[in-house]
Every structure is written in structure tokens, then in C-alpha cells.
Length: 248
Image (cartoon, rainbow, N blue to C red; front, side):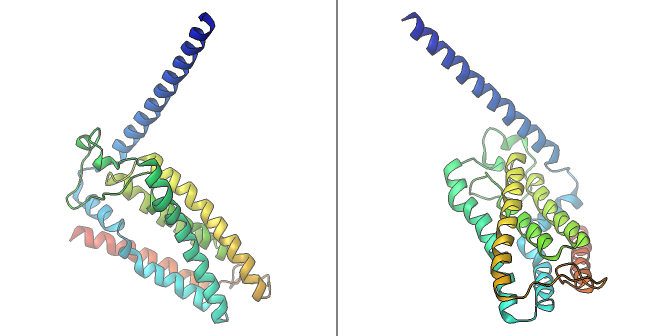
């Protein structure tokens, strides 16, 4: 009986230790969220609300499509590339929305009664589904990683990751996700981007010859620097437009 009682005490201490560790981690999560959440700056408020919307970046999506079309010779090559990107997005968001969020059931900060009254919540901001993990972060990092692997362009890779980070930060600023939600979304999205690219690469080169480009006009995977500059220019213009709209 003494041994059994001692065993239960050990289990109880370990359980209490786990609870304390989780509470500490959760508190760190909340503290970091507060440091990102709303700055009471009207310009930033409008900019973050506008930047988090999917339709804001539609011209960027068309620019990426233009890049793919211009730098692939056949309709089959274009379709495989586009489907590779879409596969990454579907895998990233599908796993999150259909599997992880319903299982974890973590409330969004703006819906959690424990924390929502400590946040600055902007008018019109609100989502009813669960928080863990961030589909915005997962989707944008999946796309950014795929494009990075696809084009092998340093400048475009930097731009795409800046875009993905902006989207992720908006979720914290608006109180729609905890930092751990966003970090997990970033990691999962990056992994999915690599997986989807590997799948694309295998299928693409079953039907296309593998050519190593050695030219100042093209990247090593055959993407024109001029066409890449178009995508970068579209992104910069969208940022400028977002600032103008936020001011107005």
C-alpha cells in the first residue's frame, strides 16, 4: 500500500508539473500575442485588415500564373505546375481545417472569454472556426516554398516569404490566432510546399526533358529573370496600393 501510494504521488507530481508547464507556455503565447495585437494606429489597423484578405492578393496570383505560363512550353507543363501549387494549398488547408482544428478545438483569441477582453479587437474582425493552427500561415508558406523551389530565384524567394510573413503577422495583429498557431502554420506550410514540389517535380519530368539552364537571363530551372521581375513589381505595387487604401 505504501508503494502504491508513493506511485500515485509520483504520478500526481508529474501531472501537476505538466499542467504548470502548459500554463507557462500558454502564458508566453498570450504575452507575445499582446505585443503584436493592435497598436491603436488607424493606418496600421486598416493596413492589417486589408492585407489579411485573400482578394487583396489576387493580382499577385495572376502574376504567378503569368510567370508559369510564360516559362513553360506546353499546356501539359503549365497544368502540372499549376496543379502542383493547388495541391500544396489543398493539402495545407485541408489538413488544418478538416483534421487538426476539429480535433484540437482551440478557441481563437477573439472568441476566448479568458483573453478576448484584454485584446484590441477591430470592428468587423471576427471568425467563428477554431484557431490551431493558422490556415493563412500554412497556405501562404506552402505557396512561397513551392515558388522558391520552382524558380530558384533568390529575389523572388525573398519577396514570397515577405508576403507570407505579412499574412501571418496580420493574424496576430487582429487577434485571430496565437503565435503558436501561426508558427505551426508556417512550419506545416513550408513542409507541404516541399512535399508538393517533390510530387510536381516527379510528375513534371516524366513528361519533360530535364534541362540545366546556364544563362544570365534565366534561373537554373529555366525561369526568366524579366518575368520574375514582373511578379516582384506587382507585389511592390500591391503594397503601395494597400498603404494608399489604408490612408484613405
